[in-house]
Image (cartoon, rainbow, N blue to C red; front, side, top):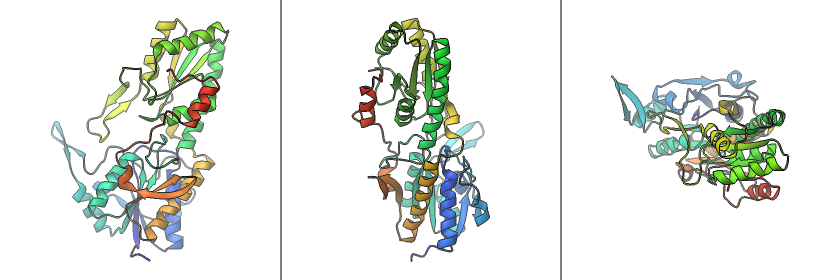
Length: 363
């Protein structure tokens, strides 16, 4: 057995349902099976930067399996290599990796379990180069982590988005409107694709397939002529018109990932109204997609991921990301997935099936 007696756990990036299930699985298995000491790092890498680390006992992680969010807190603006520091009226970006390593060593941490998406894995990859043993657990509602076919949090987000689309369906039908519903996903269309298909959306727009406004309006007008008096469009926040740019809600320069997408639904609704004359409304689901209790599927997947992460550590592995691939649990080097995103292939079977039943992708 490797010389691991004390481990740290952190949750980085945006929150999602299932984080607490991973924390619970890692901590309970570490305490029960291997008699390790477990320390929770508050607010992701920010806790390592600011040295906010606390020991976790059995009671700290009991009754949290079904809770959304994360009991440790998280941050998506704390990359140790590019940390924003205010000096007077100016903000400087500095490298505080040495400080992070110093705090981890001072706490006696033999390894870190880093739960997060591509941004967190990028941070973990850099820490590995500086001598810290990190094992990654894939988290994102976007399902866009390279090398992993299914991340926990995605199933819950799809359920939430599909339920909202179902509710939009009834009001669209009552008022005979075109309803554009914006879902999250950043540069990947997995969430829009799955939620759109599950809800029977008439048009699904994803970043991987730039849309043609004239073709969208033609589909909607044709539906109206056939006495289909309402239409539902499920639109990913990263969707864009052919030859156009993604709609950016804001830029946060102090963040490692400064671009915040959002607003495509409002733009598209206005464009559709102008080109077709149809009564069109926009709804952005926003952060509701990150909240709530995880589905049973995500609870199980998160538990399996958490346990496997610990097993990897105790078997002597280092720098590995737990993944679901080929229908089972596996692992891959974190460095292979850092700074990369898994996008929807344009020949994906679900795209083919959706087209076969008459769904338009605006192309």
